[in-house]
Image: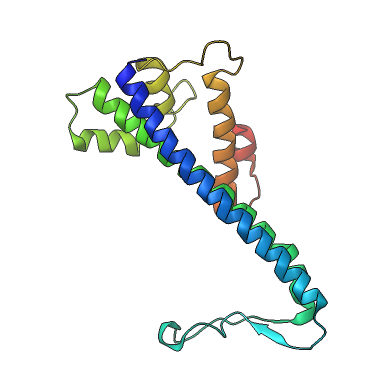
Length: 193
């Protein structure tokens, strides 16, 4: 691989990794907050209801709000089950989006260096089509990085670039199912997996 492309790719991936660590840290704090809330509501003995809209300032409320109220005894289970599931689903969705963005940045930088005659408009179109499947079953981004730019596995590593992308394709299918079918893998998803 061209050293200039390798350096640009490393910078893109480093930025992506930093953003991923920050996202992971924030998610860990949310998980901790759920545990603290669940234990706190379990220990309380007073009777009350918690409204999901009561603390929204009047000036930013919608004319018609959908309010859900939970009795104190319902809150520990809410924080231990559906809320945790939502946090985990959101983490996967955002993680894949973040990695998509980092890989698209690598693709863009590689395109600009490898094909300097391309204008910004052409590069933008190619980046938007990065995840389009091609005849060999891989996406354009993979085919370009491996086939044209020469991305290879590090020397001495048993994991191949194809293996890494295959696992990532699986994560993208799971993200797609979380976003579009409430986490249910359809026959189409299963075929791709």
